[in-house]
Image (cartoon, rainbow, N blue to C red; front, side):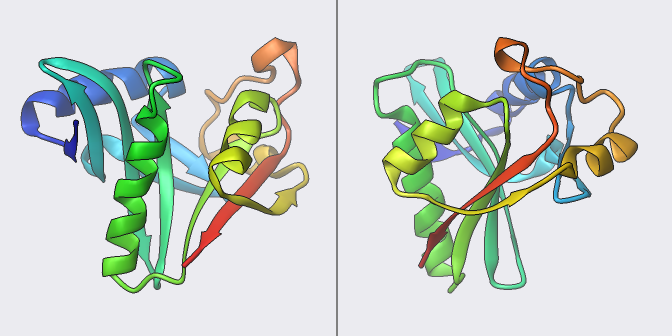
Length: 156
């Protein structure tokens, strides 16, 4: 079910990121990341894409850049996270971390439920990200103003 991204699914993942996050660039902690060729995993069932995760390893830490489950409540997100944790352990990372925005209540609940700990809330951090990526909307889920970054981590 979970496997490294194959060329034939890379285009589909890139389309999803373009449509969902105005990608391929994503902004975290005031930096832009090009996800178009980032390392990652996909969850597939036959020829159907169920989800994907993209990550970057740098300075002994692994950042999840994008995690998207196209079919929820099937363990797809957790399986993708486990794949990244395995890579991070193999590369002797001290932690796996990620950023989500304050409007993403669903993700905030999910990350805590699967084992991530809230590490920090970066107040007004989205202002810096918008300078790098002006396409970040002003309002997000449930019409909540997008202003802050929530940083979650999984210590290894």
